[in-house]
Amino acid sequence: MSEYFARVELHSAMATDYEKLHADMQGLGFYRFVIETGSGKGQMALPTGSYRGWSENGIDVVAASIKRAADRTGKLNKVFCAQVSDSRMKFDSF
Image (tube, rainbow, N blue to C red; front, side, top):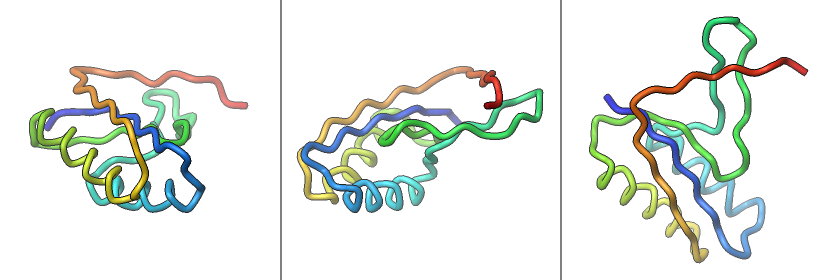
């Protein structure tokens, strides 16, 4: 299973548009937070429209699925999707 990071920008969007996107992205297995590994400091929210997830599909299938989720909002959009081989989360609590 591969790890992915995605960023979706919805043009002229309202909060309700992003709420729909968040629900669709969660259905794809993408979430709006990262969990810090090792220190037990918890999780950190990602900026609006940023997601982290895992899939057994290749990047072309994953990116197309994310684009369809963005299109379902009815807003013009831009999608960035990256497959990563490894990631670490380290952050201070505040």
